[in-house]
Length: 219
Image 1 (spheres, rainbow, N blue to C red):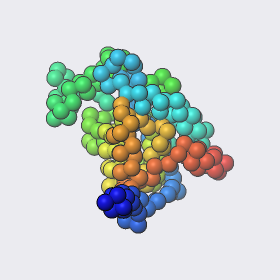
Image 2 (image 1 turned 90 degrees about the vertical axis):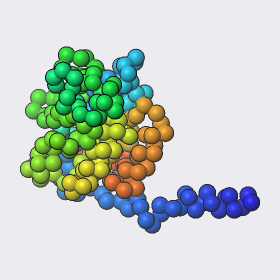
Image 3 (image 1 turned 30 degrees about the horizontal axis):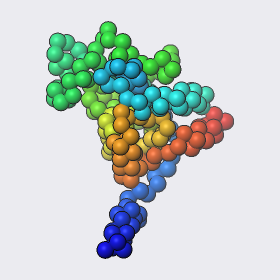
Image 4 (image 1 turned 180 degrees about the vertical axis):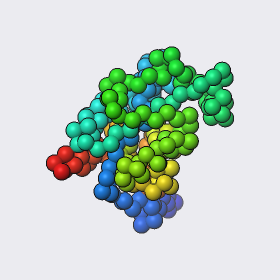
């Protein structure tokens, strides 16, 4: 029985090999997408506070600066709802009422200071999880000639996963930087990184992302 159990575990561990997990790699023109690095995720005591996002903030400024030094396009996203009752949040705000904090005037809806957009960097406002859904992101990237998205931000199981899925479906190579994304719990964080890397993009290390940006700087 023990041997059969061991074989079963091995079968599960090898189940994805040769089926999912092909590396897609970088294309010719990358852009950095910083997804929802908002203070609601990093302020202790806030309902959306996520320790994994705090950890990601230890690395995100370095990646952002490397992207700035390289001269590649940089796009930030935030979340904003308007009007009484956040009607533009639709069913998502009903499912997750905590998101109703994302309104003008709430400090939790502001960008984290270490990764605030610089002058000239585009900010795209969204109401749902994916940075593509209901926004001009895809059209903007096409107009810029971008074929690869380097993604950082939060949360891994929510907006990062949704953006990775839609990024693939819009024809972009999605590179999620492991150290620069975070969630409120390590289990969904790791599970969603596994799924993204298996099916929707490449999960890469911060060092891999930085190494790719260096030659861009020299062009």
